[in-house]
Structures are given as C-alpha cells and as structure tokens.
Image (cartoon, rainbow, N blue to C red; front, side):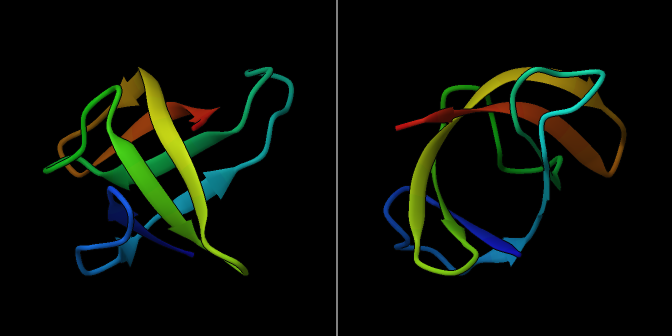
Length: 72
C-alpha cells in the first residue's frame, strides 16, 4: 500500500495498514518516521483513494511510527 500527504499532491510512500485487532480497536498505520505527525491528513492508495487523518502516535522507532487512523 502507498500513502501520500494531504489530498494526494505529494509522491506516495510505502506504508502498512494494520487492521483493528486484539491490541487496538481501530485500524493503525505504519509509516516512515520522518514527515508524518498526528493530525496530518493523508491519502491512502489501496484500491480507490481514501482520505484519512493520523490519530495518536501509538509507537515509534528510529525508522517507522505507528498511528491510529481516523476517517476524514
């Protein structure tokens, strides 16, 4: 899957959509650490483009961050 900032006006970057499950009651998104912050509007490019907002940062490492995902 790919992800871009805003309404898709930037080049998409790789991301991983993690479905809701045992540890979280909402979908989460793994994204590169650089360039993404809570509250940012993003476009998810998996099938038809889908707008969403990054919620709270759940976990972070030097390379990736995991955010809860909110509908936009």
